[in-house]
Image 1 (spheres, helix red, strand yellow):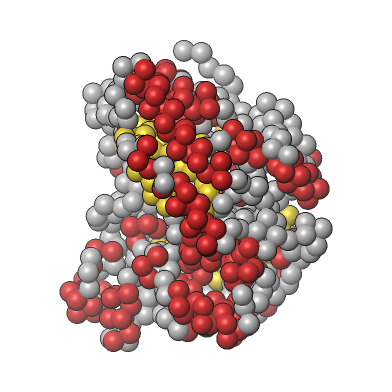
Image 2: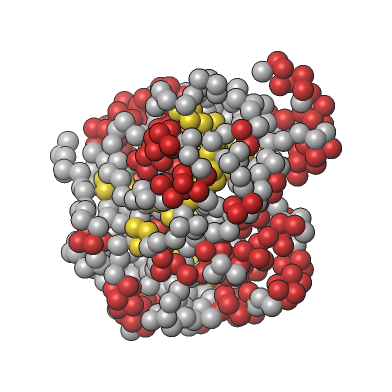
Length: 594
């Protein structure tokens, strides 16, 4: 550490927040680089405070470092000032713990959480002295792999990534490192070919239809400690994953469709993991993580036991956005033991017709009951998630968002309750691969702006509501990249060469640059984002098999046109094909009565 500080003293003293770059955090693994047989650096292509909170990274970091033969280090995307200083002093990016250059690792693993990080990945490779094109890498360079939601359409960045991990990474990462350890004396091509044979691994150099990997979560694979940030991170709390997958199957949601089947962790393990994580880290909050946390069979019982365990300690429970139909008065009371945080509910649409179109399986009465339960228990802050620009949306559906809030206000006033402060986070529909809406085109920016103004015209009627809109220009770029083919690689490369970096932060996006480069390359990303594809035509992500039958997805799309919903697979099998095709099944916890 002292050698590193001497070497980087000028850089660290000249940049903002040098604590992002020094490592040596409490509870970091700090394994011996030289003693490890295989070394991997997990690289998150966003700022330190975002990446250190990512739970997927924490899981893989824990699993690799639990193996005596392997070591895992971490790296994050530096802010622009730090990159400029690295360039000025001719320094390369390094692992936070080992302080070794990233190009000295055997593997670099990138998280593909969002499409706007693609150019950042290329810049991180450049500052690691690694060729951005996989075809230009030699035997001396690390193997570059990537996984996460965007890996379900690998085409746009397939020229830059050696291997994609499709699906759950817990077992496959160990198989990759084990296999590499046995054959690392072989040529790079032979290594890639052998690794491509592992289930759940897609290699663009040796392409084949690749089936996603499914892992049944167990206690051993779950971390109970992780590096503690030197300053506040975006999610400064202990996290326990209680459930993987979601059987609700909202038609816009990629995570629900790509993470099937539902796999619940049992109650005893959840309680043990939460207690251990809080005790080891000292966090004053723990999160019970899932796509739909209050769908867990024993969610009320779990929180009741943990409330009793943490009683009087000031330790608070946090749930991600919740299902209104499962939010009971009892759950509301359980969640307020130590302090009242903002309650987050995701109706997604204001009208019943639109909720049926997207298969939300949620009624206005259920939404009202959830909100009123919270307000009766003393909550005065509610957060809603909505989407506009959804397939088959009409103006009345957009205005129904305001009508829903007015109805909530009326009911609160009618009961003599305080009208809550409501924050509405309103995103723009982005069609995602492997979903029933993946073929459907996005609204134009002009149409989204019109709908935005339409909703804002009702703002005087809902003065207690704050409306926060996601940028339609950013959403348009996301819609293009998420469904693009290999031709998008040229666009991504030119954006990177022209300075695109950390574009996951809107203030960094040069929209004029995107437009001018797209025009030069003959790419009309606005048109591509708005195009509705023929479901029967070949599409770039067909090479990835999630287990869902394509005809089932098409059937769900046709049902959406008629505003017909599908019963959640937790209630009745929806016959999507995952369990049959992948020879797996759903796992639910046994109901416990306290």
